[in-house]
Image (cartoon, rainbow, N blue to C red; front, side, top):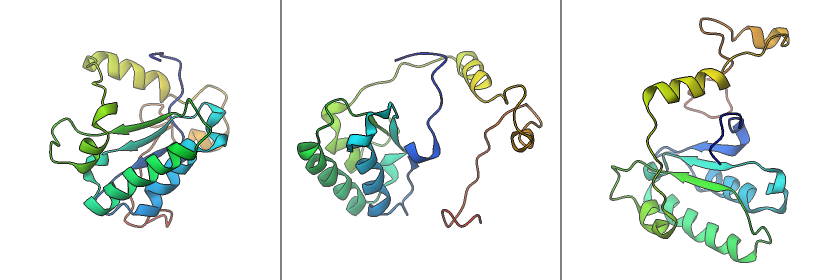
Length: 151
């Protein structure tokens, strides 16, 4: 659905892919998306899936379709985002029948949407106030070479 009030995905719903993404990471998000617990309206996402190495891409395909056959979740929510410029990606080829082109939004529309969703709500806990500067946003991107290690 295209709605301005829908929340952003949470940390457990998104996997940002790199050439170093491992099979276990891909398997975990697919399992979350296709499990019976996924009926909780979460939308699971792979971002930059074209960056996955061939071995991990093959594993994603086989694991996804194997789990899909045994899943009792008819209306799962799983989105794979790939660059339109990545024509030689195995993921794009493997999931081609599910391909959907996303309509473009103007820069102004995107900025307005992000500005609405990234603001710290009034009256929030002191921890959230640490994120207020400089634009009152409550989302920060932290990149790490070792996920979960805080480095």
